[in-house]
Image (cartoon, rainbow, N blue to C red; front, top):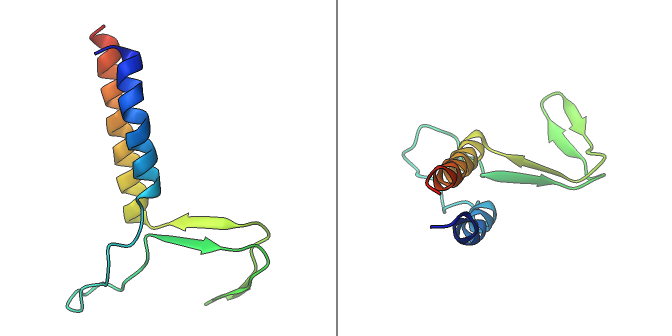
Length: 90
């Protein structure tokens, strides 16, 4: 497979991966962990209560959970490895 063909296939997959980070449903009631969303959107100027006091973002912020970040990182590393392998097989 040529590099251009592989890039054509992987680009939509990467775009889908980037937009597919949404909570998978309700948390398991028997789980010992506290439910947290995969991402958190903070709007500029809207105050957020924290244990240390009020936090007011100056710009829109997007925070990802560690699990979501690591899943995205792994997907990107896999895609880069596939591209590298395709380059080496030319």
